[in-house]
Image 1: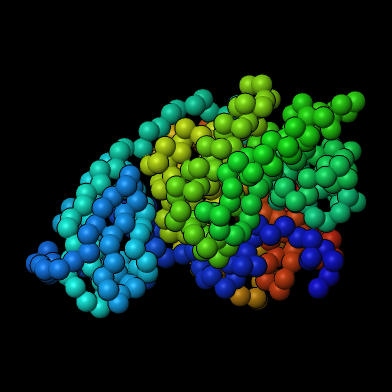
Image 2: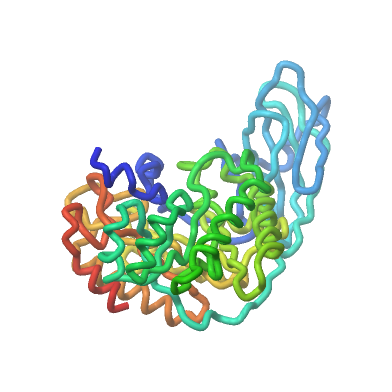
Length: 416
């Protein structure tokens, strides 16, 4: 593997190549948000048997139930409106995704023996929303970094703002970017793992340390032009099973948002406090509904969306998935930060999990069109194009080829 491939950011889909398309019908309506299911079965109410059963209870939005001897898998039934839906689970607890504004009734039974439990209902509150003023000026940036300090003068010909993973938070990288006039505007913390195993206090402490050094007003900028970062992105695509083992642990994600928000408020003056960006979208469902229903909107300043056009164009194709951007703003009431979107150019190679392949001319046109559309919304605060240099056999999202030759999109991004 070439050295630059070893260093490339982990935010795009080497993992997702095996995960399949983001396409297919979208479960975006609030009343139809479902948990990730092994099987979904529609059942008439008459099928609910009577007899010996587990005892079901609710603790907040978390369900737990007693064991049935010799049984390790259970059917969790939910009912909102007329339809019953059943999810097959291992273990004896679950936190279903919230259905804001609805009351959902749950029952549980062992898959191999016994009968349905008592019914337990959870009334999910409406999502509380605030309406901040629209961003004064939209940032146009690039996913970059990991290509060495010598790359930054080249990056600066296309953009002046970038999104960078926290693993590149060092004086050499940031100093080289700053010397080229490039600001690391968005620092991304966390690209894979288990959300529930992240220690919120330790995670927040890492965020504070990076921004005290490299954020606006940070110690690194003493005697230099202040190009300090302004945004912290809390996990990359945490609703994606290709990178996270628990992509429906909304409570753990809410705890992270809360810890980061409170730590930043305690350590930075309002004028330089980094803004917290929370992930809203995930394949085929808005991840944000889960954590928003737990109060998470109080702990973020904006929501992130990655509106790729779909492996077969089913999510917008050349236009990008603009409807997911519109829905994120409508449902959250927050400014939208598009920290990834792009169109690969490996014509003749298979589609990626996110996108069809496009010619280099089409890629440039798609980028230009998308940025102009986003600027017209009034609520999109940032568009970061993915990415800088091509990698792999079909992940040719770069504005440069592997030989570092500029594509047409390099000039298009500079013009935008």
